[in-house]
Length: 267
Image (tube, rainbow, N blue to C red):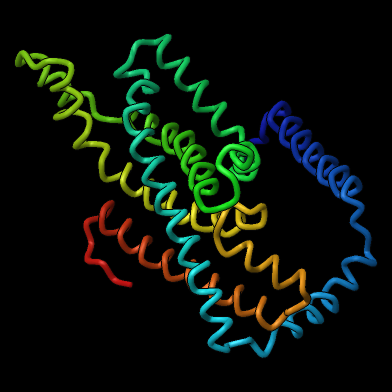
C-alpha cells in the first residue's frame, strides 16, 4: 500500500521552524562566548572547587551558625507562600473571565503579569532601602512575586471548572456569593492547594538565593564563607541546604499527590 505524501506546506513550515531554532541556538551560544576551551577545562575546574568543599566543617560552631540561617530560609519561604496564597485567592476570582466582568478580568490579569515580570531579586532590591537588611525584605519579595504567580494559576483553574454546579445553584435561587462558595471553591481547592505547596518549594529555593543580597536566609552565610575562602564550611552550608530542600520537596510532593489523587501519603 502506497503511503500518501504529506503536503508541501507543513513540511516547509516544519523545516523552517527547525532551522530557526538551530540558528537561534548558535546565535545565543556566540553571544555567551562559549568556546571549546571552556568546555574542556570546565570539568577540571569543577573538580578543583568540589574537592575544596570536603571534608565538611561539622564543628559545633559551624552547625550553630548554619542551622539558624537554614531555618530562616524556611521561615521566609513559608511566610512568603502564606502571603501569596491569602492575597492571590480573591484576586484570582477577579482575573477569571467566567466569574468576573470582562474588563475587570483583563485589568486584573495585566496587573498579575506586571507583578510576575519582577523576579524576587529585583523586588528584594526595591524593598532593601525601605525595610533594610534581613528576613523581612526576603519575605516581602517572595510573597509579592507569589501573588502574581499563584493568582494567574488559580484564575486558570477557575476558568476550567464545570459550569453545571453554578447553573444548578443559580436556578435554585442562589446568589452570586453562593455560586462562588458552593459551586466554584469546592471544585478548585484541591488543585489550588497543590499549587500553594508547589510554590512553597519554589520559594524555598528563592529564599536561599535572596540571602546573597542581604535579604535574609542561608545565602548570606554561603557568601560570607566563600568570601573568606572557608570552603569546608561553605560545603557544609551547601549540603545542609540541599538536604533541607530535598526533604521539603519530598514531603510536599507526597501531600500534593494525596490532595489531587486521594492516595495514601507515602514518603
